[in-house]
Length: 131
Image (cartoon, rainbow, N blue to C red; front, side, top):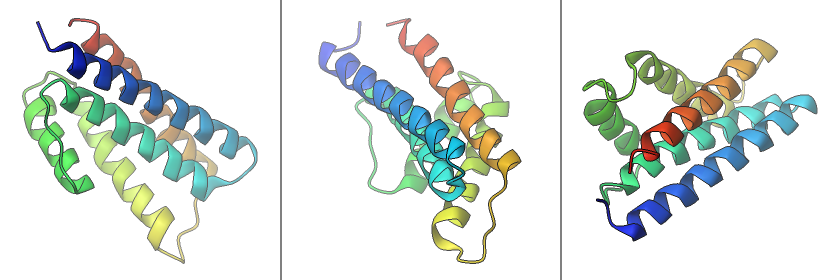
C-alpha cells in the first residue's frame, strides 16, 4: 500500500487538474483561446504530477515531468499510447499559445486541448482508485 501522504498529494493534484480544465472551459466560452489553451495544458500537467506523487517523484522542468511520464507510464502502456501523443501535442500548443506572438489559436485546437485534459484526468482518477 502506498503512503497516505502520497495518496493525499496525488488526490490534491488531481483536484487541481479538474479545476484547471473547468477554468479552461470557462475561458473557451469567453473566446479567450490562448488562456484556455494554457489552463488546459496545466490541467494535463497536474494530472501527470498526481501520478508521479504516488512514486514521490518530481522535477523542476516541465519537459522532464512529461518525459518521465511518457517513458515510465505511456511507453509501458500503463496509460494508453494515444494519450502520450495527445500530451506531446498539448505541450506544443501551450508553448505556441504562451510564447509565439504570431500564434493564432482556433476553436478546434482549443477544444482538443480541453478534451485531452478531461480524458487524462479521468484516466488518472481510474489509476489512483487502485491504491
